[in-house]
Length: 348
Image (tube, rainbow, N blue to C red; front, side, top):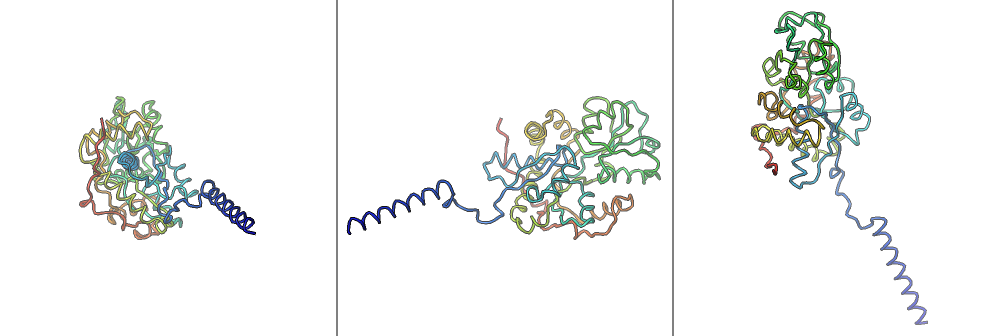
C-alpha cells in the first residue's frame, strides 16, 4: 500500500509539473498581464508634410531616448486614405493629424471626435510660376488655382484673401489636386497657381520655377491648417496615453523651434526615416525663412477656431451647426509658455 501511495503521489506531482510547464511555456499563464488598456500602443495617422512634423519627431526622440513607444506613426499619401482609416478602423488608429475644417465637418456629421492639439502654425503659401504675370491677389482673376481639397484650410485662406480685394471663388477656377502633384502641374503651366502645406510649395522655389505670391504667416499670422483629432472612445479609455501623446508633441514642437540646429536635425531624420523625401527639401522649408512654419504655440484656442468656422460657413465649407466645445477638448493641451523642449541631441 505504501508503494502504491508513493507511486500515486509521484504521478500526480509529475502531471502537475508537466501541466504547469505547458501552461507557462505555451499558454503564457504566468506572463505579466497589462495593468489596463491604456498601456497599449496605438496608431497615429500623418502625411509627409511639415504640418504633421511633430508626429515623427516625437516618435524618433522617444525611440532614441529609450522610452516605451506610446504610439505608432502611420504614414499616408493623402487625406482620403487617412480619413478612411481613421473612421473605419478607430481601434487601430484612434488619433490622427487632419485638416481643421475636415475635423469640424466630421463633427457636424455626427462623428464622435475631438480636436485636442494643433499640429503647427503657418506653413502654407500660394505659389505661382516665376514667369507669370501674377504679382497680386487681383491678378488671379480668371486663373486656375489648385487646392488640396474641399475641406483644406488652404481653400479657406484663398477665400479670405480674395474677399479682401472684393473677389470670390466665382472669379477664379478652383481645382482639387493632391499636394505632391502640384509642383509638376505648376511647372508644366497646367495650372496658374497652387496652394498647400509645405514642403511642396517650397519645392517649386528650390527647383527654380516657383515664386511665392504670399505666405500664410504674412497674410494670416498664426494660420492653422492641421490639428490632432482623437476618437472620443479613445479619450475615455486611453486618457493617460492621449495626454502623454499631447505632451510629447508639445515638447517636440518646442524642441524643433529651439534652434536652427534642431530644425536641420529634424529635416534629416524625418525625411530619411518617415517621409521618404530628400532631406534637402525639408531643410530648405524649415530654414527659409525660419518662421515659415512654427511649432511652439500649439494649444487650440477658441478665437482661432471660431474665426475658421465663421469663414468656412461663409465659403460654403461648413454648416455652422456645432460649437467650439463640441469639436475641441482643450483639457489636454498644456500652456505653451510652460512647455519645456525635449532634452535631446542627435548623435553625430
